[in-house]
Image (cartoon, rainbow, N blue to C red; front, side):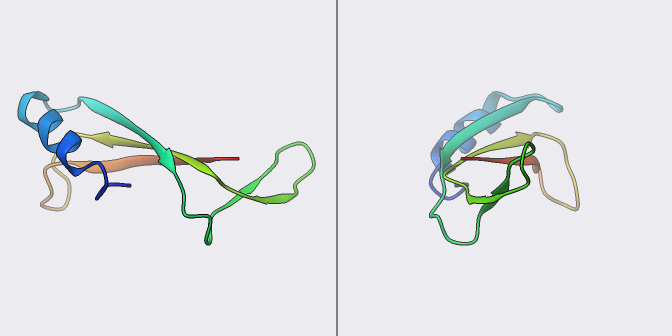
Length: 72
């Protein structure tokens, strides 16, 4: 996901201030991603994901991935 959206992230980083966020939506490859439904606790393969990136220095990096949400 990050590699596919590299140019978009680079463009965002040029003008983003510390603490700004970007949300990236995409599809998973279907291998090894699992969603557990809250209602019946059944495991299902995740098909979509949303990644939240924050521009703030962490461990020497200029931004970090805050959350990754998987959806069916």
